[in-house]
Every structure is written in structure tokens, then in C-alpha cells.
Image (cartoon, rainbow, N blue to C red):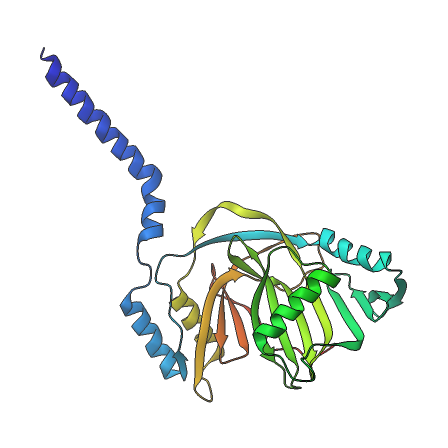
Length: 295
């Protein structure tokens, strides 16, 4: 027997086996994560549907394959408790309000609702201007974050999202929680300012518990999410720009110890309209989000 030839055959056989096993173990994920999921033809087809219904794409689309999983969340009980302890240490009076428990201290009142929502009101409202002059967005953001850090408690993973203007000319600074760079839109903080003063901070904070299942699954493409939304909304009465589309997590508020929320495509129409499209099913998760009036 030719030992050299036998060794060569064995080496080739083992190499082939390793390639075979590597393909079956790693190739499905490798191919899924590196292939282009959205082709130029997909985008052109989606834009045709959008334009026919008076919507116009004004933001770039990520063409790579996107993946997601369900996320189990729970009200951030620890954070909420820290906020209330802060009020109690300052001598807060505890009174029962409609559908809430109120903690009153100095010029601040924290209203705590059964689902975990906290509303902090200020009477009189806090000055948030510069010698009577309105601050720019970045200045407002910096001043608000300094105030939260010094006077309240900065929530973990706080990320600035956007500033909006309500019909009553109030400014709303919106924040959400980030999980390893992925936004949890259902976990949020909103600050309401009017005429250069801070009236209200509203906090609905959630803690991520676990991902379900632990292995991520491919989600629908951004183009599919857009066409599903247009199919749901129907034609727009006037030209409406699609300003942004972003993958994150969202759900309606629940009064529960914990629940699962799906990955969603958040789609921004115009300046202040947001829709959430389930990234697994393509269903619309929520009706239009518009800036809220001051409660």
C-alpha cells in the first residue's frame, strides 16, 4: 500500500467532511446575514406603489437581511421604586388621586398609575429658557437631561429620540430605552414644555427580561412593511413624505407582571405621524401616534 497516497486520501476526506459540517452548521446564518434582502427592483416596486397612493420615500432603506426576536419585558419596578423613595426622603405627602397614588413634595407631584406609568408635574412650572428667550432643541435637551440627572433619576439606557410640537404649541421631547443599540419604543420618557417652562415629565419605563426565542429569526423587509402600511392606510389625500423607517420593539401598555413584545418597523410619515408594523406578521401594531396633549 502506498502510505503517502492513503494519507492524501484521508486528508481530502476529512477536509470534505469539515466543509460539509461547516456548511450545515454555519451557512444558513452566514448566508442569511450577508445576502442582500432588498433588491433595487424591490425598492422600485415599493416606490411605485407608494407614489400611486401619494406617499413619497424620503429616507434610505437598509437593504441587508434583518433579523429579530420576541422580547419579554416587565415594568421597571426597581426604577419606579427609586423615584418614589426619592420623593419620600424629601418628605412627600402621599394622597390618593383619581386612578393613581400621588406623592407631593415642594413644587413636584409624582402620580403613579397601576400599569407603572409615572407622571411628574411641576407647580409652578420650571423655567427652561434663557432670560426669557426660547432655547434651541439641543439646549433644551441638555438642560432637561441635566435636570433629570440632578433632581430625579436618569433611567438606564435612556436615548434621545425626537422633539415634536403639539396642536397647542407645546414642545414634547421624546426619549426611549435602547437595548444593545435596538430601540424599545414602548419604554419611553416624555417631557412637555410650554412657553419656555417644564410642565410635565411622563415616564413609562420597561425592563428587558429575556429574548424569545434566543435564536433570531428573519423579519419582513422594510419595503414589505411600507407596502403593508399603505395597504392599511389607503391613498393619502395630500402628498406625504416617508421620513424614516427603523427596526425596534413596540407594544401597547399592559397591566401585567411581564409580557412579550414583537419586533416592529416604526415608520414616520410627515413630521409627527408614526406607525408600527409587526416585523414578523406585517400587521399594523398600533393606530397613528400623534403628539399628545398635556394631560
